[in-house]
Structure formats: structure tokens, C-alpha cells
Amino acid sequence: LRGLPLKATRETLDAMVRSCQAIGAKVVLVGMMMPPNFGRRYAEDFAAIFPAVASARSVPVVPFFLKGVADRPDARDWFQPDGIHPLAKAHPVMLDNVWPVLAPLL
Image 1: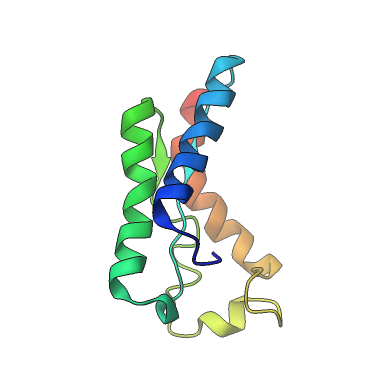
Image 2: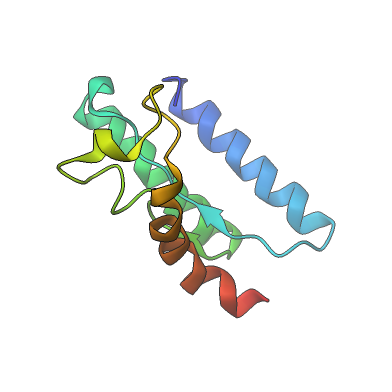
């Protein structure tokens, strides 16, 4: 979430997935979205990286890890003072986002 070049972000994410697969790990790609201050186009292109890498590497993907947390009208109340890390009350929501994709791999 530092606004790095998208090509480098995609290449790094792809390399991480390939490295995990190379040692036999089961991979779930957990997607993230950029804050709106990066601009709509950058945010859309960033979000598209996760399903593209997941498709290219044949791994399941959670489209947005913080769905139901960061996109709430009262989202600020669900994060620590740094505005980045969710509070404990957000954990069950995050689990609900990940579990349907993760459970079949266990």
C-alpha cells in the first residue's frame, strides 16, 4: 500500500506465489485494495493484480480481505489509531472473508 509501480507489485506477488508453489505449499491469494487517495485508476489496476495472478498461477483468491471492514460507513471505528490495522472486532469479519476459500484446502 505504498503506491509502488504496479508492474513491480505484480511481479513480486507472482514470484511469491511461485516460490510457495515450488516447495509444495497450498496458496491462497488474499487481495487488498488501495485507499482512495491513490486515485481511481491506480486503485482499480492494483485490485486487478490479485485475480490476474491467481488465475495465472491457478490459486484461489479472496478478492478483498477487508470487505465489510474498510468499506463500512463507520470504517474508522474498526481500525486502530494508525488507520491501517483493524481492531479485534474486525477479525470475525475478516475470517468470514477468508474461510470459504481457505477451508477447502485444509
